[in-house]
Length: 536
Image (cartoon, rainbow, N blue to C red; front, side):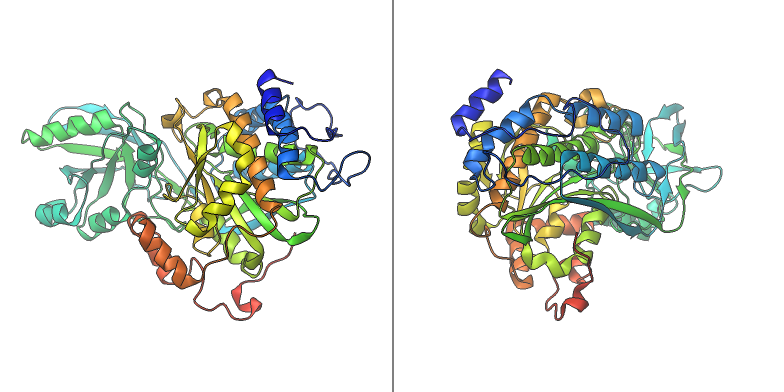
């Protein structure tokens, strides 16, 4: 056992025994294959199935920080299966692989749950260049789910609209008609800035469309030359206005020409491929609780990715981590009071469609959902959890998660984090936990061509696995839920109080809440009116 893992284990508490896994060598790569699920631990021999979280924590830490299949799982997911755009064959293969990986991890049940994305989309080779007053190539990446340019591309004047607010479009007026609008961004200084830059104001596209613009070029916000995919819509439909992310340096060069009074013309070609509706799978696994199996804690991560790199920081690391967290819990040989459900969502990049679909399908179960933990971003060091404004959950969370303080997790805050799948749980009134984390050195690579397996810090990911496993176990094994499910009016107040309402409006999600398409309904009525579901 690594020295650090041993120290942590002794500091928390020594357990009565170490459960031996029967799944084969821990370092072995998990490949897709036919295999029956491992049987759940039954508490035979010297091991009890009713140990406390403090007693279980050392075993989980030892399993997570020691020899494990985590690295090889991530290598296979990213380097063999590669990028996983929702609705693609690669995403389907990744879901099949995740089912087998969860089976090897020792969960009781695992399956896929399909949902529908309104349109399928794939990027063609996007090219752009300035053709006047000088000529130079531009580095661009088509925005995901934006329309293709017409055959032969678009050649048009570029108008600098700054941040793209209403006042700028009013001032530009008719000059925007038929033009390509350049939308500026601030330089990203941390992971939150990078994330917010990729959650651009949906109102800009609407204003550009009304003004008659021909296309949008969004300035990339990392200081370097990185370009990345940016979602053009939040509901899986194709945005009719062609949009692309342009490298920051190129955008600034265009801006300087315009500021000098030069008339800049650009040619853009984006042969994006659009299809009809496509199916996309969520992967759902469960460790069944010993006393209250119909109550559960849900732990989530993203399985899909954009297609510019290997999808390592952009989803893959946390997908592999979540599978390993399930393995670490199983290896401890202890069953919590409630069930623990692990969900890998697809459709994340298109507007968190997988979590939205999951909540619609599982509405009759949501009164039994005690809490949701969402691991959404990269491999940065976790220093705490945000409760997204749920002050009523803070005392219980601070007490229950005491065992992870020795892993450096001690900052429990109410301040909301950037929008992620946790939003769908919050909108249904479920208490949510989102990691508060430091930006890793490769944070800016997420979603770019540099998003590759080698960028992930495996030791940091192992620590993340221990945190995820212990947190899930602690909440699932508690005497009572950490806080009650909120009503719609309480949720509405929370959204306004935390500023999440404004974030949702800017990102384009607010209309879904207002129409009750997304989130808890004012009065659900009979279970049959809330959506049908089949228990795992």
